[in-house]
Amino acid sequence: MTMVLLVAVPGGAARANPISESFADTFADPVIIRGDDGLYYAYGTTDPLREGEKAPHRIPMARSTDLIKWSYIGDAFAAGVRPAFAAENAAFWAPDVRKLGNRWVMYVTVTETTVAPGASAIGAATAPTPAGPWTFVDTPVVAPRPSGDGGWLWTFDPAQLTTPDGRKFLYYGSYFGGIWVSELTADGLHLTGPATRVAIDNKFEGAYVVRRDGWYYLFASSANCCAGPTTGYSVSVGRSRDPRGPFTDQLGQSLNVSRAGGTPVIAANGNRWVGTGHNGLVTDRLGQDWFVYHAIDRNDPYLDEPFGINERPMLLDRLDWIGGWPTVRGGAWASGVLRDRPNHPLPPVRVVDDPRPGRLIFGDDFDHGLRGWTAIRDPKVTVRNGRLDWPVEGTDLVGTGNDAGVLLRDAPKGNWLAETKLTLPLGEDTVRNYQQAGLIIFSGDDLFARLSVVSIWNTRQVEFGYEIPYAGALSYGGTIAGTPGLTTTWLRIAHRTDATGEHEYRAGVSRDGRHWTWGGVWTMPANTTPRLGLVAHGGATPAVTASFDYLRVSRW
Image (tube, rainbow, N blue to C red):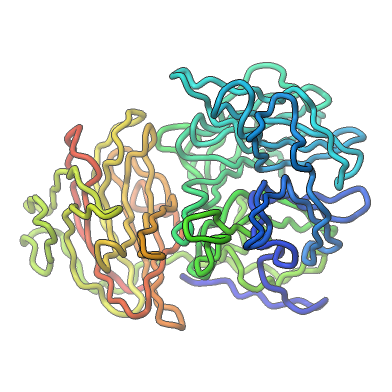
């Protein structure tokens, strides 16, 4: 993966991400605003702030003069303080803070309400200043919403928007139910009119919407937020001329259909940061946009004990707008050293080059059987007429079962790019969990990265899944790499080694074989020799066959 090189600008030494390090080990779901006093204020989700602390902070707050150096200024809500509709065991997640009229309004997820267990809502609190004091409104802005099957939709992750004509909207929702938007009353504390779904369920959460050059941009996070060292959380975007949508990505694909689109804004890039998601935006005094988000250090993924609270500090990086579309650091994504300084002139962005195939190393068009391949667990494949057909197995590799068939061959040394053309007719909208097929990087049954077209509930996605041994157990997560075609999808994995010898694998997806979307990176240890292969598993019913036209490996 070609990385952007950005030169440090005058005005002070470069500082390391995370920017919350001075006051917190974790500061998840962050949002930053600029107050009337010219200072910046940051807010995070309910968690302990430090390792070993154990006690949660109920919406911790911090303040900065320059977006780099931060000081903790207290919690928005003391223990026991809650709105009348909140259950005693409620936590407050994912704050969004806005100046509405002459007061500040904080929207929060209220995880439990008095309606029923699992019935979440969006609450609001008001304050005269960004530092508080905050007073809850005793009625929810968005009340708990029945799912229709005896449960409750996830009413999470509020994000408020005010349009140029003064209309106010609130976005909310998560995987169970999708992302919705409703218009607000003038005071911003009540819904008015019907709700509109703008992004499909089972793919998106953590909405944040901004208006730029006549477009409304919906940023949303995908995949598991909290899988420790294998967290694949990432952010993608769509845009619309109307705050109610429809939102489409750079290739014109809707975010609100079974094969939902989304143009990548940030994902893991191979450095220490994974789980780069749940973003906000803040604009500095010079008009430069900055992307605030949380991430997980894969070398220190938990606040305390393994598989406990995920440690998600707050990071900040420049947001670049290229051809009308946002990307973090020109596509280089999360930084380890924050060389760009807010409120100072920045160097021009240099855009990351996507991997492109060069000289062919080898290719198999499946005209001559399986020469050069090694079969694990005897997959029932048929090779004929330039195609490998593989009935999707009712097996899997995730966890300890490890009963899935795998076809493997040795990978070359150095930089290389593998591509296959896959036909997998999974239909749309129906539930057929978790049938899938695609490419795999395989160091063993418990150390692999799998790029597959997969059915996830009512959606069809391309997931780059990753399993590793961790703390005496197994850790699995996935990042969403792109959108599959209706029946046929082209998949690529680009490999390189970094200066330490660690293997980096980046995922690419195309719906037509010509236009490519490049997603996140997973890594393999330097002392391993991973092989390259094919898989087709996840569920045998309803019966479906994966057909591979070729596997080609090139230099890049």
